[in-house]
Structures are given as structure tokens and as C-alpha cells.
Length: 133
Image (cartoon, rainbow, N blue to C red; front, top):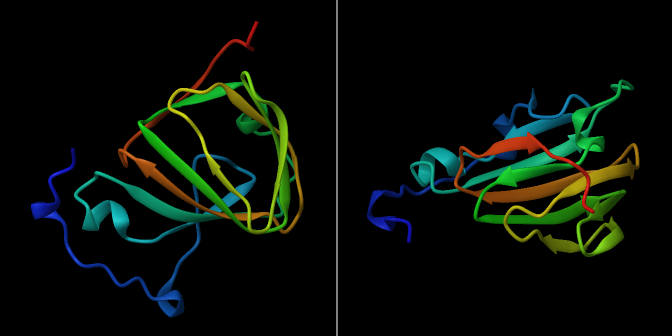
């Protein structure tokens, strides 16, 4: 269980937000300051589709080495395929709780796709894996 005694209050202002490249080339990321506020127990960021048209590793089967991952769709839609769950299209207002280490891949997303993602721990690895049997 995280040690909340080491956490700090965070107010991340939209007015001063910056968008940066991140894990996937086709998305920009807005860090919400939660990683620092929780001393790395969690990370929260908004992820939005950018104008990059190149292939990206997110279309390959992969896993995230984490113990919690929640995705809330703020705008647009995306279709993912999840091991044991099949294809799922998520759209504005939908939530996905990805169980730890579930194999998944993105199939397609809208140009206006935007999500809030919360993950624990903050420093998690993403690994390409073989497709499910």
C-alpha cells in the first residue's frame, strides 16, 4: 500500500499546462503533477491525439508493467483489442480498468481522441509481447 504520509497537495492549473511528446509518437501528453505529489506511487496525465501520421508501437501487442491502470475518455473514440476480452470501442464518457499485465493493442482512434489515464506505479515499463494464442 502506498505511503500517503509522503504525498503532497497538488493543484495543476490548466492555464499553465504544457503538452509534451511521450511514450507514443501519435499522442501528446499533459502531466498533471500527480507523480511528484505521490512520490511516484501514481501518475496521471491527459493524452491526446496529435497530427503525427506515422506507425506507432501502440498498434503492436504490448503490456504495461503496472498494478493499476484506469482510462477515462474525454473526447473522441478508439478501438482496442484486449486479450480475453476481444475488440472494444471506447468513446467519450467511457471508462476502462485495464487489469495488470493484460495484453492489448490499439486498432484505430479518432483525430480528436483524448483520455485521462491514471497508472500505478508512476514509473512503469511498456513491453512489446507476442499476440495472445
